[in-house]
Length: 307
Image 1 (cartoon, rainbow, N blue to C red):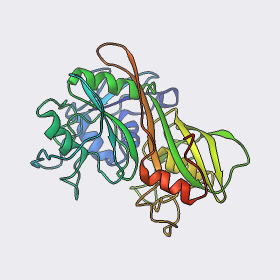
Image 2 (image 1 turned 180 degrees about the vertical axis):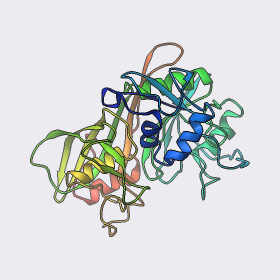
Image 3 (image 1 turned 120 degrees about the horizontal axis):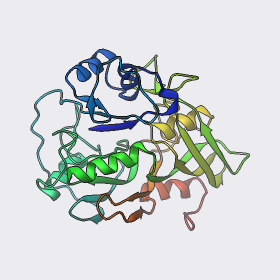
């Protein structure tokens, strides 16, 4: 189940239009079918497709699985940072897909979680994404939380929708900065040229805010710390590319020809903080930069002493 909170800019927008903007991989007609089947609700109540949203409306949507696929548990080692009866926090390596999808039905984080947790994973997001509350790209490493109970899943998803989770990333980007810190506040939407990509748009998109801080200047590259105020798909990659600083290794939003063998964009989800869905305690998890990232910094003439 995906949960979103309508913002002031969404006031008066039709539900089907809103959801087609939020669900990048779903067409408007597919969204309308979900609404007709009561698989999309507003404030936990069924509505019709032309319902006009109000500021603060809570929109929930369940995406049916495209086909019946037998996802198998796999004994894949996990770097577990924390675990209890409600949730599990892991450090995902670069190159691991988070959940099964066409072309990736094995070797994913979900396959590993199914083996480790047995049947103790939330089923809210369906059989392809058990326990998965939020995602990071295949080639992004770092901290993720997965839910075991449906109550935990719902409450964690609400924190994501309210943008109250703390998320800090490190990235290596092209080009130098004159300033030491800044903010990119630009709307994002599905690209009209390529539906698989996200683009900055002047209007009609989703509000997206990324704060950045320079950690090290390394010639034609810069090491950044980034804080997400919102968590849109590909937000960091698109925002940094938009301001002239594409991520090193990002062949989608940067150059198709990349220097160095990065195996994907140099992006690491270093810190994740949230309120425990049952105890109410604030919890924060931080991981050190993975070896591939530290090696890149050293090759670029930087240092890893204070990162």
